[in-house]
Image 1 (spheres, rainbow, N blue to C red):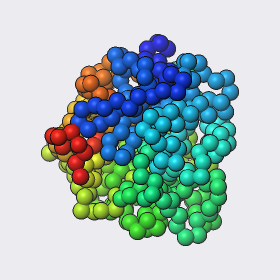
Image 2: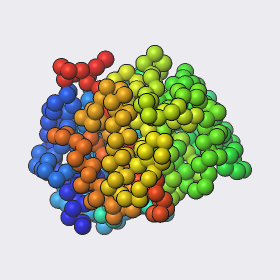
Image 3: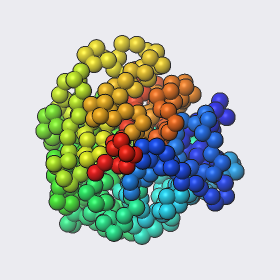
Length: 416
């Protein structure tokens, strides 16, 4: 089981690293795969990094060293995971200063402080927008996994700070603007001016969404500009409460792509945070809705912004019927079919996918998922992260997958 994980899961990219060398390997459709020199494509279902245009999408990186060993202490494991991120960045002639959006997954809530200590010693003077989540499990017993998005252009990269919000060398910037795209750090339900936590969940949701709105306003944007949202909740049974409030912040039928994920824990005892990506030019923003999916007050199946498609997380539901089978393989095939519906509506297919997050009901399902997931991609796999998000192992809708895809012209160059 462990050997199969090492072959197939994204943050074991570091297992294949040689001491320093990375190759930037050109692929079809204008993509470039960032991969180790000795990377064996057979049996793997991810690319360590995908470079398209000036944007690099990096798979979840864990704590294994280039020789396949794992450091003993948690602090060393975090340092190694960040080093593995840096290795992929280096292959695209970038460094940590190019990173604009980062997700850090931890398997133990008690490790948040220890992770932060190493993170702030390493990240440098231009930290990215960041989301930190405690999840139920990571493959092969990993305690940390880090994925990110980076951009080559640092001239037009700037941190966004609303007026009055506390600034500190060890505080995540509320957002990073990279050209037309604004990447937001996770926004929770605390008043940023007073630090006071909201008194109940519904007020917390409103405060968190108001914080998103405030950050966007500081970037001269509004909620209409949001392309993709991940609401992360650390409590169950509150989906409808969150959804009703959330819907009031967006236009019906034109809501962002969304993946609502229940996790084990959030920093500072938050019960909900919103992680977002927004685009400045509304003329480039288009809601994508396949014909078999009716308009929703809470999520569009996807949002196309220029050449980039942000697809909502999908599980194995059949439109109009819901989830009709408990069988994992059948659910996964339906999830991929639902994602393909969104891709095709934007004149794309699986070959355009650059960034994938796979949420599992149980981490033990990873091999079974890989066996099917890999069949949908030919020749080039997207960057990918895999995790078990919570302990609700009997939840039939726990398996979810979300995509970012980039459309390319027939000539093989990214469309403008």
